[in-house]
Length: 73
Image 1: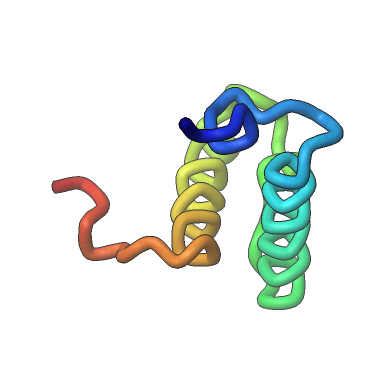
Image 2: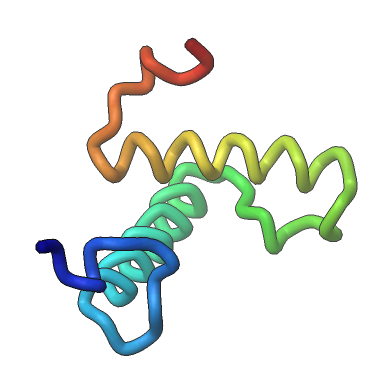
């Protein structure tokens, strides 16, 4: 049987939660270093925010080792 840490939702105080936050923060820093925006740079719900959120999620998938060619299939 798998442990609770291997299932969503992630809970604060678990190692998986800490890993997820570290990955998110890494992607935010990399995007800023490359001159790209992060979701908090725009008002939530605006067209710009939606575009950046989509781009940010793609970067998160890439950073977590997912094959980006499978996106949208």
